[in-house]
Length: 630
Image (tube, rainbow, N blue to C red; front, side, top):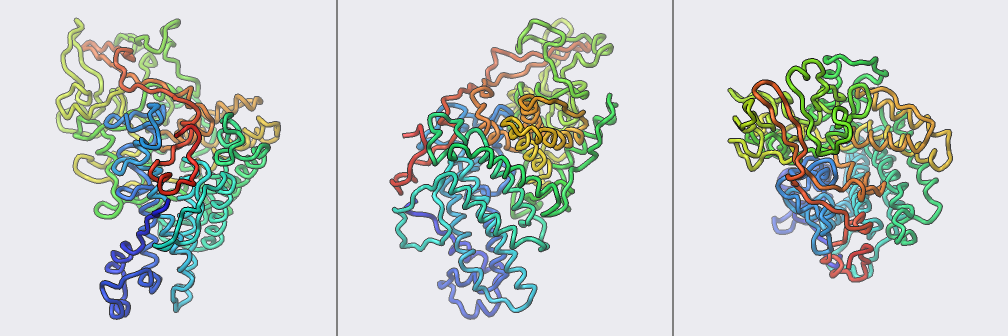
């Protein structure tokens, strides 16, 4: 922290050429650009804050919030990054202050890069400190100035929330640093003080943004309120309220004893404020009526397409989107999701493969639990599942990919799943292999690691991640332009449901049904029946399952499994699914115990928090390292 990056000057130079007015140019020499240039014109301030948006992802080189080549979900049990699995150091037990891998990687990851998050905070501190002095002439310019200040407060709150989510209490500073300032006296605030500082910024953002219209993609009061809901739910969790037993009294990573009930109530009320329309009108995309079962194939397809369109939308956002990141075809923010995640047989890179346990976690279309051993009682997860062509015709559910809930078909590309046309090659994901009837191999799957097209990009698990990919984009040639949805109404509903259910676990039984009602809106939209229970602990399991499926691949799972402190349970090795398709139509599906694709382990509770980079500790030795890291 002793040398905190100050990049306002360099960005001001770039923005000056892009947006400055003639009178400013006449008065400033080329070698005299400074922050006065930024604050000379409200439109330059607007463009400058636009650059602060671009750094919300916490990575200077690829700091755009949203899609990345390596997803945060690959730091969980949901997906596997096939190209750089060792970078996920918390899954490998190798994280240290000198080795933060994915979390500081400047190319594909870097979601929580300490240095870059603080660099953007410095930019925002400078804007907030100087924006009141920007000259304006018209009432519309005065309104714009207030709105831009609100946007800056929102972004700063988001940056500090990312720091807190990863590290607990952090160094809080809301004043711009000078080049000669001494930072050696700065220390980490408690997690409670950090939470309060974030909420203070959120309140300022809501006050300044309420009632104001803005360009799509810039912050709104709704976005700030959604952030408040997310922050409070994190703070109300087991992890931050004594669950990390060895650090239960450490104010850097735990709230004072007895805080959890009040935090849960605050989290519940924050989500309810959004649900009540206080900050804008939002609703789930699609019907929330309790579906009449059984669903027809056409209905399953319709529900799946409705869900998928949340993540492939372009242009004006749907009713569910509270705030997100937009991507142009060329220039600006860059998203090549189809190329990063698409099947190798389409000349794409096949990254972030769904794991077998994650695939099996999707329910059946009637809302019952999927059972791998339904036809093989007494087996285990590695027991092969087989079916003859005649058996499949008589009972299609003998295929593990038939009869699943609609979201499964919007999220996972499995062997045989329809995808894009590609000439004479199959217009579906071909991750399995074709065998002669005598058991000899006839041909390798086009999208497998043994195929003829870029096999090094082939799936390691037997699956590809369909979610986020645009069926209309040929990833080999074109960028994606679909929105990354950072905050959506489904999160608000499930945040509310979780807070209510956890309050019921703590004894406030009246909250249980409210939580289930919100949970069931999300399920019904997905074509699934209501959950019904009078047991708060059962309701908790329902809620956690729903978050895992509804937010699959979006990154929430990394925060959730930490908040709930279940990473020791869900961190398991990743194995490959092997599929044999015979010429006569017979099938075999087998999770191959001999094909361990990723060796994962959980090294202890201190890995629930990220280490602070050693270089930052060396710059400011008074900064206390997170527990468990030397």
